[in-house]
Image 1 (cartoon, rainbow, N blue to C red):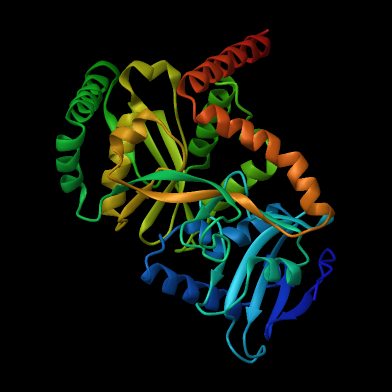
Image 2: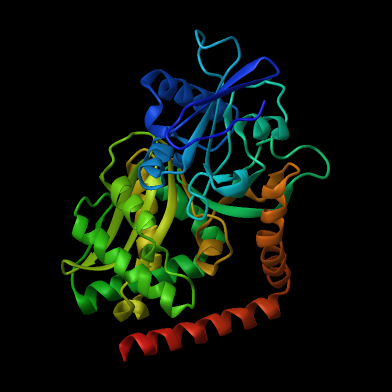
Length: 389
């Protein structure tokens, strides 16, 4: 049974004896939210990372800034029982669905009890979707990643820092894995203090002005490197502000700031659950670039996270030299889509597949990727010059 998801309306359907209701996040009651959290705890106990992006708090926050956000809620034995699954998504024209917060969410997928026996296409059908697109699908989401040739087009590493043994133990690992990096970064931190003033670090800064400073730095960084400015999208800027103000233990914002003589020189905004910090938006003041304040900040973040009871820092998908130096291991995430025949699937294929394949072609060829990066940097300098004029 296919659902017509009218704005603001609750829709229902059944597949394989499982009843599915499509709700807006605001329609989720405490019963549903507690069931979501319980199912997620069970997934974490089986080895899933404790990502805040997979908690109901993230979907609730996105729903407040993205009115097209929906949640499929699944019941196995009628609504008198507890829900057995949740699939948050955003829906657009022609039934095109995307992972909630696609483009900024670093961990995506469904939160399901084991043994439901559904296929991805059956779930899409009952949700009224022709496509479910993802760019950071959590590893182990077998519903969307079947054995053999499947819908996931590419797999990516997401480097992590393990501080479960405490920060001194992490420094010991760096002394073996990346001794030059650690020695150089700590020396720059000392030089920063000698030449610019007292260095102070705040792991969880609550001042909204510090967040605004970070967003300004990050916007300028996007422009310098020729990339689209995420904070120019009001829904992303508002989402970050809302999450910074959140006190949800499963998904709350953490703003970490490195100060020199009470002047912020580097900052990072991420999301935390009880045991994982998802690294999200780092940046720094270019005037202090020679001291590598961003690297100093990440070491202090690891120290602060360990002191706050966090076991893992997820640095996020993507290759970067600083991640190679800092990381102790990695997770895997996936990019692709599940399609079922129809106009929405055809439209998705036409709009998304050619550029995605082109990006993959460039990534797999280092010389071409370096040339592309130089081109982006050149475009960024042109944009910055126009902005100055």
